[in-house]
Amino acid sequence: MTTDNEKLFTLPKRRSKLWWQVPFLIFLVIGTFYIVRQQRSTPFQKGQGFVFGTIYNVTYQYDKNLREEIEEELKRLDFVFSMFNDSSMVTKVNRGENPTLDETFVEVYDIATTVNRETEGAFDITVGPLVNAWGFGFKNEVMPGKAQVDSLLALVGMQKLTLDREKLRLTKSDERVTLDFSAIAKGYGSDCIASVLRKHGIENFMVEIGGEIVTAGVSPSRVPWRIGVTKPQEDSLQVNQELQTILNITDKAMATSGNYRNFYYKGGRKYAHTIDPATGYPVQHSILSATVVADQCAMADAYSTAFMVMGMERTMKVLKAHPELMAYLIYTDEKGEYAVWHSEGLKTAE
Image (cartoon, rainbow, N blue to C red):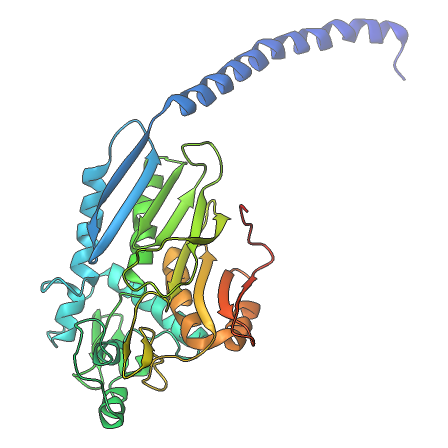
């Protein structure tokens, strides 16, 4: 039992402890105010350049310009994945030189293998010869016939690749099989630049390579990053940039694939750039644009390409099996009119 005298005796000690905490709280408040003020006064840097045959943009809040470090990282990736670089690792693999692979190549190859499996082959890094044959890539002027499609199909399929993880070598069942990482490399590149920024403790940034985006924190306007999704229109010259919607994307990655820009007409028929690895022919279904939001931009990049191949029904099955993915899909309904489906957790800024 505590007596009244004991209460009187302990009271000064409690007050003494309280007064010791007051200066600490004041210091904490002042320190927090100083940090917030410093963050607000730190400028946003901006950079732009070329990689993988496309344009990159980066915006980040930091007191130094990191252009040299960013360019060095992009140069490193270019020497692994670029189809336009005769010295790149993927070019050497395609020429049958059997180079020793590095960790970056293996990491992206593993992501491609995972998405290939989860989409039942809809995403395939060996489909390049068919894409080129249909008039894209190097713009073949001759429309492929059934015999040519069938012969090229024999060279398509990731099951024709075997990775030796100890020797870091990639074996092809047929030396004519070629790899093309263009549907995943831009997303992976955005992930890598984001990692460079995070190593410097940068909390607010946006990285974009060819439309594949990684964001963190807030924009220069002190609000979540607002990323536009272009409205599908037959605009192969990319003159019309009307937006379908604007998404609030923070601390996530986003990638968009669409058939409405990269296409051509021949003989009165429209041919899209997305080729189905299973049939060898351009896809013919209702999805016009597939935007995917994920934790990794490489994953978002690969899945957005796969969804363009799979169509609505198969895409929905994949999204149900992968709740970590969110999607914004623009398609044509039964009446031939534009319609939209998006994941419940995807927030628009409309």
